[in-house]
Image (cartoon, rainbow, N blue to C red):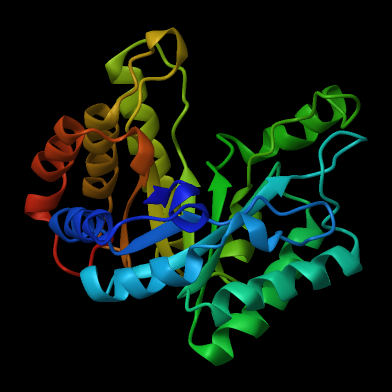
Length: 298
């Protein structure tokens, strides 16, 4: 589950921590990506943004033991003069690693990256993953990341790139190809696919979207890394058909289409804690939890 910044940025009472821990346990959430950024252009995060991080970690150790807490760090990539952070600058990547170290020292169980957009020829992003893995792995910590859903047809990417070059604010779709997704999976402990925001007008189409991307993704990388398929707990603009129930049913259809379960753990990623109301948590438990084993993530 992706969690809002206020957990690291603001003070909370013991009762609030206790209630949050109960929510995580009741819904069998295995990993929480606590927003700890955004990362500045130079790769730093000002300490004033996370004064409550250490207290959060200590409280969750008490009230949600076993739940992995990860520092969620991200920023808009600079592309063709637009965006904020230059990942292809080695000095910026080095500073990001120092920022990672700060959060690991505070007690977080891992680092979760959400840099956007990421294109399938992004060597700088792969290098950042390699560098981060060398930091996290010896410490027994996790490296996870959020990534857009796979392109529908890999062969279409060169045509999109030619027709929609990276000029101005418009670019060809930043969707991973199968090859790029495998490269990412080989470098990360967890990959969370941002399958939401599909903007489809009917439940059948939205469900098909979740089913197909779940099947494709798990076939591609389910034996390489833990996969979470992102599901929304909000209603997109224009009241499209996508919602939590539609997404969960679609994910389950995608799983059922597999010849066998993936070798690595898999599950859904709830986006987000600040948009999920009690009725949606009830829907999550009814549509997801009963058939899942303890191996499956939240």
